[in-house]
Length: 251
Image (cartoon, rainbow, N blue to C red; front, side, top):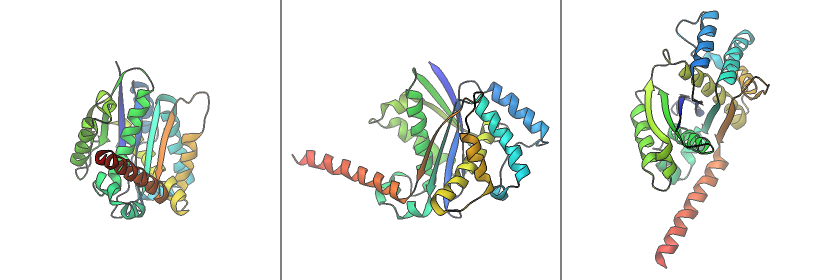
């Protein structure tokens, strides 16, 4: 069985941001990535690792160029990236079936979307197992574990249990993959702020960098942007399924 490790992080909080995102990367052998990432950290004098803050949404051109080098390292050494962004206000207005399934928090909608995308991606190849490593957030970790377990126990999606083997939480200072996930989550949120609200940030330039293709790059991507229209489609689909089940029972 092939075995993959995925590193994932969030960006944004529902209490204070218009958009929340969850993103990260999946790879079997992280050693080449770790070596190149560590080299860049030394080169740019970042002994505590790469970590973005709210000021980085409007990062200067020189900072963007530095971040672009980290993006290029990801794309040369990592197999697949996943990102999901959710419009916070649209989520709060969505049908209760959507909010209930996601603990009334758009973060968990982003989390579950990414985890399902990971499962679908791995299913395209031979039998494989996946271990997830998420950035440690005491306010989210326990609930994420519970949702992870619910997904594994879902009998309508047996592929979840076959694929998802473990979930752990770590300090990004010691896991370079979490630093890469942090960067991608911020970029995905900046891009979604533009898609949803027309807001522009210099950090969006890295979204193009992630999508730029060249022979030496190997990363492919799966992305999802949950706006009001897409959430309504999801809710309508769920309600249709429920109504069909009820109709069959009555017969």
